[in-house]
Image: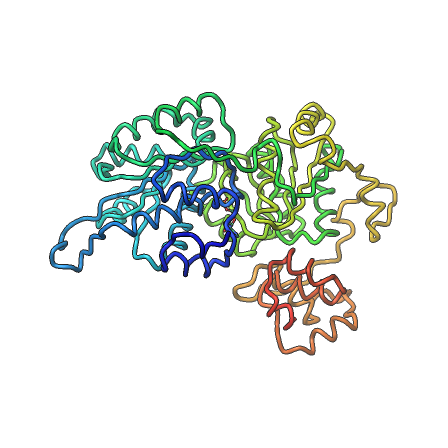
Length: 487
Ligand code: AMP
């Protein structure tokens, strides 16, 4: 089936095309027709399956087919748009992402959306609600606050979505959710999505949904196929050296690194920073603005590494994320599956690398049970480095990079480029460290008119000069074919 075969209006078809989607993912193929027919849905699916579009597209279609309030029109003058669809999300990041998806898919429809969440001043969100919106995406706490202040009314909501319901349960939102749902009109369509289906979610679904259609894709016990999984058994103290070594030897252009604790996340970022690796951190102690800024910098590829704790990373969607590193294994085996689901999304291949220290052997055994017996290849650090041609061995098994690194060149970062981006660029231009000899390949590169504009393109240029196959370059750097030919 193709999107063009689905009864979605022209404005949506145009946006789907602009997003570059042609074939619906399995959950989209199942959910979209049912939602359009008015069914309630209980969907067992995690992020990465295309579930946002699975509910956003039919919601935009359904709302678009109802009469619209046009405030420019005389008869509607002064009338406020009522909220007609409500999406509840456990985290701010996921809420923001859902809002972005509605904006992207609905860009030609004239339908509006707003995202509200706690942890930031309420005034801007209040302002956005002033003229009314068609679709509201919200975290439960802030929504209840605004409802209690009579800033938000849900009396016209005809469709409600509970996204990542199991996570809302984990975060203690269940009472808030029930209070919010109680205020909705009884005649409504309800959709519930959850990666896992514990009993309490089943109960919630029984209470809230009517004759719901069940859809299950990509169950949490089997991680997405294209992800290659590796584990290194490594001493806790040696993890940072191992990470740096891997980053030097593998084409790790974008890496999401998971830490079990906030303190640990800060520590990793500090250690990477000391080695000159551009890096961002997000965890629960960071303000919302700092988290969003960090995420944006990572998504824009201005930082090579994003270090995150599990709660902060929930709902993060970064396209083209080739590597996930479990710097620490999570306490719960299921969290492992969620983590590695961040890479290898929408059919792209990805690599998930885990570091397992002696004290984490038990949880590793549980992870193996869930992920499948032979799904994770194990490797000793020694073996890994034997395979890396540049590794010289020596008295340390994995020497600290500090000793090996050439002195950092002194230069000012160019406008709009990260320090690393300008570093690579200046090396390409031959202004880097004096010790650096320019290879004939690099010389050839310099004769070209096109200058890499960011770190991705610089790395791609380097890889191309070194003869790395085109497919690998495109996949790991995310540059398009046009740029590839120019490099
Ligand atoms: P989600 O599971 O909603 O977080 O979506 C995961 C990723 O898949 C997002 O980056 C979407 O842009 C992408 N995606 C969703 N639907 C499709 C599709 N039909 N074809 C290709 N990519 C898609």
